[in-house]
Length: 492
Picture 1: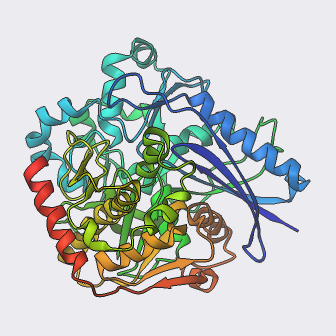
Picture 2 (picture 1 turned 180 degrees about the horizontal axis):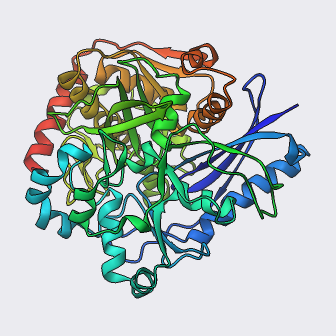
């Protein structure tokens, strides 16, 4: 048997998947978590050595458990948390912790320069000026970390997203590259050309020589070299940012296709084809993938917190012992009239689409003496679904063609959440058999790169597991109205 190895480097851990190269079935997977670092309120960091060790250990464990000869791996695909930003030297040695996409330390910088950015940059990037994206994080590195400034002065600095850092380590420093879906999240890439843009680089005062080459998404990124856990010479043939990888893995290759990934946050992408759509409703315009000269675009909605809200119930309120228990607890609510005023607003790291308020804080509203943990659990699931629905509502205003919503990620296994989502969004929710679609997407991308399948063949490998049809109930539009009015009153 020949294999594909997919590396899924996420916010809380790294997962490696072994996939049969003939049937595309997932044979086994291994996830290794690593610590989150919170130096100050609203700051989030990762130790790059922790990231690398979690990737190497997950691969090593997986290979040993399956007794796989590394020479049987045809290709590697990499997918990653996107905007998280790394600074390291040409030996691959970290110069500082990575600044995570959730980090808000550059909010003041963004507030000061937002109007200037709108005039000069926003049409080129498709993104608002927000701490979420990588450009401001790179600027912070250069302004605040002596080791980064010293490396820049001596010409020894590399800055990138996580995909490039992993590629650099896997190839023993031979390949310093990224691709369009990741580069489009930096605020430094021109959406029309898929190249680093001189005006954007000048705005953030970042030298292009510190940045990786932008390549197509499914191409030769180099081969493994000098890794203790893999033989030399395995080709790395596919890289996509995690949300674009999920779009690809969900076979959302036609205009109007939508996917929503429920992870730490929840992220929706709508395939708009080869046309750049500039949102009028607070959505992001981003690269979906780049293949054989064809640039494919997407509109994106982002809710910073989804699964992380359930983790908060587990770890902080101690209302559940495991995240999976939230569904049973929420199902204890039999009378929705008891829920009419209870709102869980999961804005622990600000509000994403469509408001982009980095100063917003989480809140639970409408509590009475009769409120029980089951009501809070249900309100938490509703808060996740309502956050996602804000993006769906924006899609409906910006784009005429919307297909059913394909879902993936850990929380997609929560049947109550999926039904609540269908009810708020009034869209059919489709859950596939494989919900590890992020890793699956780059495995399929590697096969596209090898020329063994075409992009339009992806749909043949997508299998439906369950469909959730929207129900009509006056409770949901009333709750949505309360949600909208509460956001306007508290955060706008």
